[in-house]
Image (cartoon, rainbow, N blue to C red):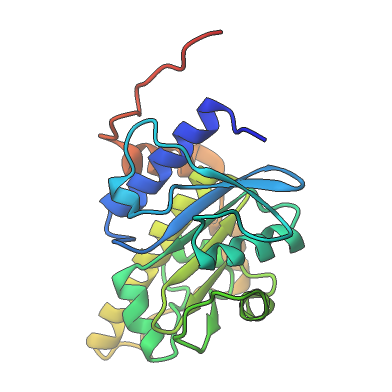
Length: 232
């Protein structure tokens, strides 16, 4: 199975956006669902170094990983197997979330961007790499119905219904970590207000181009952003 050129291009743009904004370095990957049984994962190299036209790899939702695909892509498989509504996954190493995770903490919902994670991201309390199916399944069990999970000392996994939203949500979660660390550093954890369920639901809106505008910001300057796919 081959992925359409436009899908390959969007995945490369997403990968480079994650790297450009400090959400990934040498390690990390992102993917987009192609159909019920397959997804496309970015090239197995530092996302910021993925070049224009460099293809990703089609991976089956169930079964062995293709040769050359990174071991932790099993996490993507587990999410796609369990959640039909998920169409994209990011696996990143945001520094502030990494710092919080070492304290077995995830950001509390203290500002608008944090509202998109409901009561908060899940936590996986194990710093080891996730390179076998059993461990990958356990991580996604811990993730439950959340759209993100912070892995202690081992980065973050975010899932969404589109690739652009998955990238944006990754940025949002890191911004929530920035707020959390600032509140803790100022000793304001008791005074700082945490959004209640009604506030979270009202604030977590898609209206007004919320995701589209942030995607435009995060992808700006990409070498393929204005590229027009050739017509057959």
